[in-house]
Structures are given as structure tokens and as C-alpha cells.
Image (cartoon, rainbow, N blue to C red):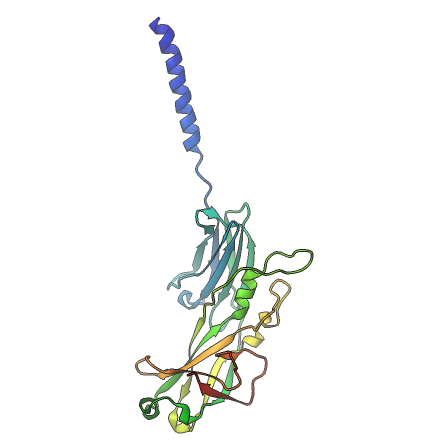
Length: 267
């Protein structure tokens, strides 16, 4: 009687053990990663990387800058699910923008190497009426700096473009802006009577300025936000914008600028 029961029990236990082994023996597939390799000539903490992931859902972010890296890694997941497509924009000082559109369906790691194609700079002559300098403190201080930040409007447009439908490009969704610090772009000496110069990247020389087949341009390429601050303490200061800026608060990137760009303070 007992022998007749023990035999089937042993067989049932062995079957369950084998089933558990099969269930735990196959690890879950690792989510895809995007590897951005940098050339040795580029400092990793100077690189600006922004990305957008889609399907299912969407997610976008800016990669945190870190020093002494030769590769940035983006985990292509949205929540807990792998992304299906990715769009990435990379910029480094002195280099042209690079834009990547990547299909992640069914892949693991995807590698892209950022190559720095040189982007020249451009020096503009500028003027700010001395009477518009906001305070006596700054009027007495000659050691002032002009700092800049680039708002790349084209990046949001690139991220929001969806797949071609019947030959057309459709856009949808929303995109929060994220500026690129340009650092100090000029000096402002009160004794020069309001005249000063700024040296900025010549973004109009970037091939993406006019648009490409994969990255068509629909809006302004971007604008440069400018401010004047105390060079010693790096605090305080005020914003300036071109007199003809209208509702815009920055210097619109363009192929040609006036001989002298006249600025006004932002109040």
C-alpha cells in the first residue's frame, strides 16, 4: 500500500522541481542601453546630452554631466518597460550638434560615437546705453562679464516629430526647454560708454541650422540668453536683450547680424 503511494509522490516532487528550475533558469532580458562614446579630445563634463524615449509612453531628460568619462550610458527604459525609439542630441563646446534617431525594437546595446566636427565662433559688436545699467553699484564696478546660455528651440521640434505618415511629418506632445550654458562670452567695461563685444558659437554654420532630411527645421534654430554680472563674485547682475527682440528675450541665431547689435535691459 505504502509503496504504491510513495512512487507517485516522488514523481510529483521531481516534476515540480524541474518546473521551478525551468522558470528560474531563464533570466529576464536586459533593457536596451544607448552608449555614447566620446573622443579623447573632449572633456566629458563639458558635453550636453539630451534624449527622448518613446513607446510605450514617453520620457525625456538631460544626462548628468560627469568628469573623466569616455562614455555616457542611457538606460532606454520608460518606467519598467523597454523603450522602442530614442532621439538623442549631443553638443560640446566648439563642436557641431549631433542628432541621432534610433530604433530600439528587439536590440540590446546600441553604440553611437560622438565625433566633434569643428564649429567656428563669431564676434559681435554690441551697445548698451549706460543709463540702463540698473544700479550705482554696477555703474561703479568696471569688472563685469557678459554670460550666455543657448536655448536650442530646434531640439524640441526634433523630439516631437513622429514617424512619417503618407509622406508627411507630424508633431505632437510637449517638450520642456533646457538651455546650454555658454559661460562668459564677453566683458563689459563701464568706461567704454556702453560699447562691448561678445564672442558666441556661430550656430548658423552648423548644418542643422538649415535643416536636413532627417532633422527638418520648422522653427527658429534657437536664441542666446545674455546677462551682465559681477565677474568677481558671480552673483547678481541683470539680463539684456536686443532692442528689436519683441516678445523674445534673447538673441535669435541668424546667418548675419547688424554691424552693431543694440541691447536693452530686461525689466
